[in-house]
Every structure is written in C-alpha cells, then in structure tokens.
Length: 591
Image 1 (cartoon, rainbow, N blue to C red):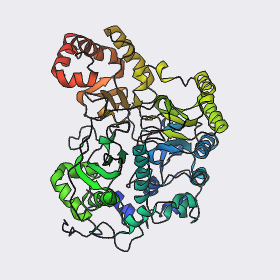
Image 2: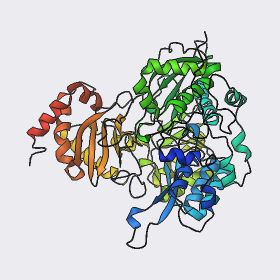
Image 3: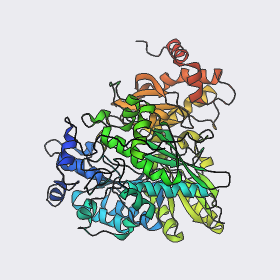
C-alpha cells in the first residue's frame, strides 16, 4: 500500500522566523561569520558565530565566578564529542585525557548522552583541540545545534548478544545518515581536508541519504536532509532492544527498538516519537513529554522512516518560537494519528502495528560483567560524570597499559572493556586506591543520581547542580536513615541548575530543578525504570530547608508503602495531598 506524497515543498521558508533561523540562512551552511571570527585575536566570538559554533560541537562560556569589575568576561569554550552508543576507542580516550590537561580545565566530563565534554578551552586553542579529536577518529560534528545530536544505545559490552550489536550498528548508521554533509566542518577545522575516519559509513546509509522520493530530500542542496535552515531545534535519537531502558528512551524525539523474530533474524524496528525534557519556568506552554508509539517498519525501511520523521519536523516544526520548536510540541499539537499520517506520506507507505514489547527496565551496567568472549568488562561509577584528580591519572595509566576500549553510559558512568580475567585484581585494586570503588561500596542513592554541570560555566544555569548534589545526597541519606529506610534502599534523585532538563530530572523519583540562588523546584513521582513523568510538587524549596521539607515525606513513605514499593510509584499511588498534609502537620510552610 502506498500513500500520497506530501504537497508542502521542503524548501519553503516560513514567513515568520526567529533570529537564529536568519543566522542559519545567511551562514552559507554554518560557515560565516564563524570562519572569519575564529582567526581574529579576540578572546571570543559574536552571538551570530556562537549560534553556528554549536553545530560544530562547542558552546562559548565564561566562568561567572572569575568575572571582575571592569575587566569583562573571561571567555572559554566547552567542546562536546559525538560518540554513537558511547563507544570510545583506546586512542580517543587518551587524546581526550591529554587535551583536558593541555588545553582544558584538567578534567573530563561524561554526559547523559554518552559523550565527553571538555571545558576551559581558549579560543586560540580551538583548532588544535578539534583537529586532534578528528585525527584520533573522533568527532564533534552535530554534538550541539539544530541537528541530530548524539545517538544513544545501551552500553552493553556483550559480544554474544546480537541484538545489542545490531542496536549499536543502527545507532552508528542513524548518526551517519543525519550528520551534516556540506563539508563546513572540514573547512573550518581541517582546512578542507576530509579525514578518512569520518567517511566510513555503510553503503545502506549512503543509499538511504541519496534516495529522493516523497519529499524527504531538499532539492539541489549540499544538505539533502536538512536544507539551508537545518532543523527548527535539536533532535535526539535513541536505539535500544526490547526491555532495555538504560538510556531513558522515552525522553527522545525519535526511538528505534530493534525487533527480531523467533529465529533471531532482524525484522525491523518499533518507532516512537515525541519525547523531550526541556521546559521553561513559568511557561505552561513548555513541558516535558514522553515519546509515544508510531508503529513498526521493516528492516529495509528503517533508515527511510528516520528520514521521514526528520522531514516532518524540518517542514512543519515551529521556526518562529524556539521554545515551541521541538518535535514533542508538534506531536502534542497534532496528535499521534495526524503525525503518523504525514510521516507515512514522506515514507511512501504506512507504518504497521508495533510489535509487542516487554516492560522497560533500567540497567546501570556497573560492576563486573562477562562479555561472552572470555573477557570481562567493568562498569565504574563516576559521580556526576566528572573524571578528575588521581582517578583521572590512574584511569589513563590503566587504559594505556592494558589498551582498553571503553563505553560511556547515559548515566554519566564509564565501562572498561576487553579485560582479561588475570588483569581483574590489579585493575580493581588500582581503581579502589584512587576512590573509584566497586558498585557495592557506593551508596545506592549516589549510584542512582545524576546532576548537570550547571554553575559556574553553563550560561543557562540559575542554580547549582553538580557541585551541590553530593552534599544533597548525604543529607537525604541521613533523612532516610532517620526514617528507618535501609542503607540498601534508594530514591532516584536528579538535580539540574535550570529547567532545560539535561540530567532528565522530570523522569526522576525526586527531581530538583534550579529556579534561583539556592532555590529549587521539586518534582516527585517518576519511575526508576523511566516509564513515568514526575510532577511538580513544590514550586520553590530553599536548599537550606531540605531536611524540614523532606522529613515528613520520607516518614510517610516508610509508614505507608507496600512491600517492595519504590518511592516514585508510592508517590503516584498515594498522591500529593497526603504528602502535603504531613508536611503541614510538621510545620512546613508555616511562617
């Protein structure tokens, strides 16, 4: 069965557009004025160039705590890598580690999208840093900006699980398919030389990109999928296997779930659309949303379906208001049935009903794991993803000495791969000596938590997160102890310095979202398996009031939970009214 080709031309510019849309239009595919400004002696670049720099994988920042009166801002850049599925070669890790010491802040930051962030790079060092990453067979292209971001897949180190290998391959194929094509990246960072490692895409990807039918491609454009305006906003993709929700799949714009038949043959993918975390304080029109079911596509149509969904967003997403420009708002406005109908027009055939799936389950991939080939993998807890100090030095020594490849998880942790059994004791002892303890030695509350970098570098942050969260977790653990909750029990806590949601606080059982100095919006009721959104419990809580605020809540949880009931589902079951009544009885909010 075929469906009608969409009538709206993909090159039509909307009459009303935001300033960023105009910057993109006049940039010659992300070149100008960035290329001119990078070679000046100024310490920073203009706002127009900043918008283009994002597409190359970097944000301009300044350390707010080092601003001095009359001296202006001390500008620096954060660089983010692109690593589909969090795969990191031995060579790339060592280069990133060295760049952090030579040109950055001396630390590496693991992100919630399975990438590295390198902070503190000065403008005059950008070209050296970028070219070094590229020549180590890494990339930063599309790590930021109005394009597809890093594609997630489970950080499963197994060699004997073909479904995970397929998810990893598909994540790489989608990343290649949706990578910008105009060549600007090489013009800027390698003086036009295309480094071979970035061009080794599969033949299926090349064919899918070139396949021009049903309006998915922009005619006569060096960017056949994006066109001159690229996408209205960022676009996030996750690829997983049935049941594995180690990557918060439902928070993505587009989700692919690989489906096999009973014989183990790859059938195709279930497709979900419309997830996203970002919102703004005080704007009810902005909201977090979970992805919902679009349908099933056969294996030979998966990449074409990806193009179809991207084309719908490209042609129909809002370009006049960036706060309403994510795909989730289009799906919310249209409804899934209308969205499916339009996506089918771009695909040229209907979606089939989705294959049944088991319940989603979170997996942290921490601790020792058998890969299936006689080697071991070791998942290391890295609090808030910050690799620093002696731990950073010892990790480098181990990775270099044993030539270990790695995986980055979507919970900001690190997995060492290809460890021979006879190496295990040495590696474990050396990591233990620098504070990288086995998962069983880490408080589950810390192990399950995440925080974004926030202050002092993130330009959007209005509160603390990474620096404040360790103390917050210690205080929450003391409250749990006092309430009679066991040391083995946990609550999924996520903390951000602003409402944009980089640490996915709206999926947490307990989310703290910065809304000012030492002040947080409190979200409760998410699910540790990533299947439910939290809701706003309190618009404002001063961090110094944390004990008074949460003591009655944890006490009623201890008293009235069912056997084995986790905190998030408990909150959803009993409702907010009971918790607020207990707070009121304890004097919370009374003047």
